[in-house]
Length: 137
Image (cartoon, rainbow, N blue to C red; front, side, top):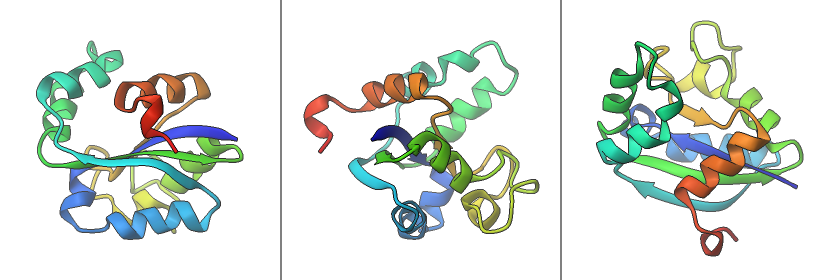
C-alpha cells in the first residue's frame, strides 16, 4: 500500500468543504491514516515549499498557505499518489476535468483547494515533514 500527503488548503477550509473533499478520497479507495488541522507559520510554509524558492510565485504561495488553517492528511491505498493526483485534477481549475476536486472547489491556479505529493519519493519526504511515525495509524 502506498502513502501520499494531501493538504486541504486555506481557501477550501474557509469554504467549509473539508468533509466533501475527504469524501472524494474515501469514496475512491483512499484511507486516511493520519490527519490534523494546523495553522502554518511563515517559516514552516517556507520550508515545506523550499523547492519553489527561486520561482516567482514562491512568496505569494507561502503567504497564501499561512492565510488560514489547513488540513494535512496521509492517504493510503493502491497507487495512492496517482489516485490522489487524478482526484485533485489539473493545478489550474479552469483546465481540471469536471468532477475533480479542483474543478469543483478551487477558485484559481493560486487558490486551488488542495496539494498532493507528485511522486512516491516526495510523498515520503512530505509525510515526514508533517507527521512522526507514531501519528500514522
